[in-house]
Image (cartoon, rainbow, N blue to C red; front, side, top):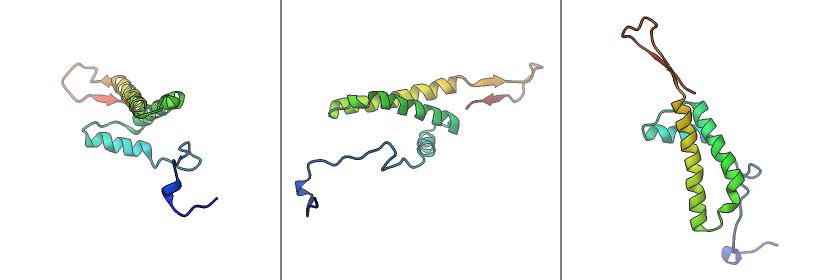
Length: 110
């Protein structure tokens, strides 16, 4: 039933599970936001952390019922992202010259 003004609308819902809206390049945008804060991470590491955050959200999405619980859920989701990103970063492998001399070394991270 059409209506002429928004005055009679109590709520609007948006399906954010990809059927009506879609995130635009979330990994690239997260990488850029991290870089602006001096944190450089590879695309695979950011993608893995984002996937873990989304997985956590999907399990706990019903827990955000009001302002306080929604804030708590947002903080926990961001915490999952940060923990996974830190774990991936801490799993870096370092290697240097086998001679033991001073020289360049390499680091491999996701």
